[in-house]
Image 1 (cartoon, rainbow, N blue to C red):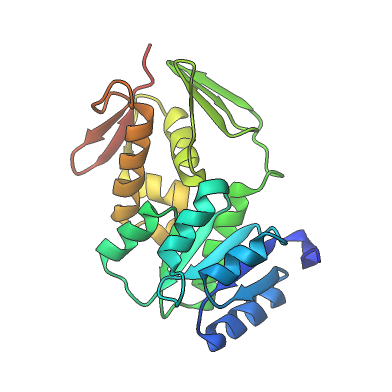
Image 2: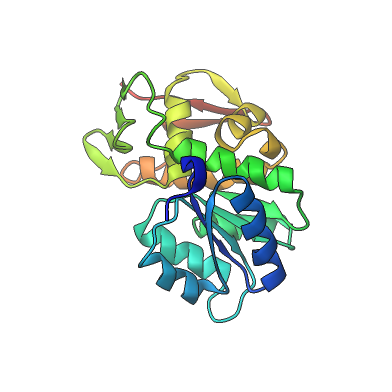
Length: 234
């Protein structure tokens, strides 16, 4: 069934029935097509028959936890993933981001905060919002914004949605020092400006993929205590 107002379909995965019930009611009331699953196994089975536009998952669940679910989904899908958890330690957040999550919301959370994260995630992944310029070609980089494909010196890269968004933002501001706050706001939204671990994880992933052959930090330069600078090459 298509979602009301065409806002998008969301799969909520949590082993607490009261959580899934509240989230389904809330998201549905805001026009999202919403289904629920009790664990990772059920979620993967459901995704074989139904294609959500966004996945919201708890971390601690029986059978298959949220981290493994993120890994399985990310192996063959680029849909946005928001992780929910009562555990707010930086180590756990980093593990979730490493597993393929795009965003992390700590329980308890406000409805407005979650809805803002949902809107931001769906907005960035929506194919309907096509930028005016479809190709970013600079230095060693050829970035196709419509197909979300990247070539570095004719080498094709496989990037997650957030890695791609981060690279595009950097590529649009070559040679400029971009502060941590500016990058967090641009890629994850205003609610994430105090989440520096997001940048550490995704910049680390991006560097490994961009410089797999050369090593070092040639394209993304760290400006200590300030942010990062993008050098696109010749």
